[in-house]
Image (cartoon, rainbow, N blue to C red; front, side, top):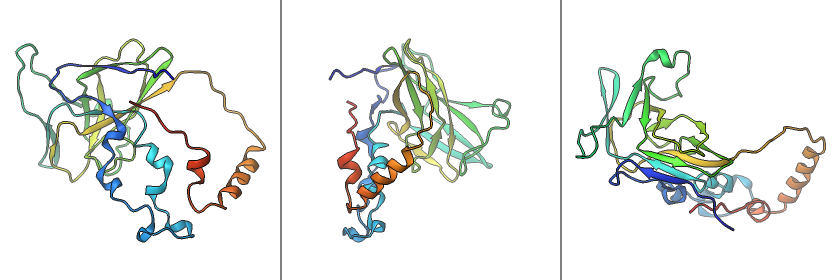
Length: 234
């Protein structure tokens, strides 16, 4: 099967490049036990999130965009700031990597719980292009609540090249310190543009109950063995 391609181009070759989500599975997830007490039992409650394939798939799907340089988060008089080293490439003028949107631009918009109200934007340092008929879902890295920032979600049509843009984000309350270059700040998932229609299937719930009955005969692995399709991103 021929792979579809998402092309990317970097503003400077020294910046951290996008990568595959499967390469940044968080260490805390890797250390989780698959079963309570490390031992499988017949009770479903002994199966932990480490055994949940749909949860794992969030760490295997698509690509990530990292911070291009180091950032330092400080809090001064109750206000949060994001700073970076000012340096100049001989061929490129000084850049702004992070912007701030005034309150008038986000008036009435709720802030994610646990984050500062101040509305920042990532000024991305790359361009993206996807195949004809596809768009890009760009969002906070899924199930990465351990990260110090939270990027809002957007769907972008990028057939004709997505240029550097401003992607909104918030900073987690209580976090100050270094955000190292290469820290994932957004997940990119290609989605196919095709017509869809929502229809009711009166037999569907009954069919699902039959599947559930079949799955109850297995202690573990029914979903993986019968439904799961391995995601392929390289």
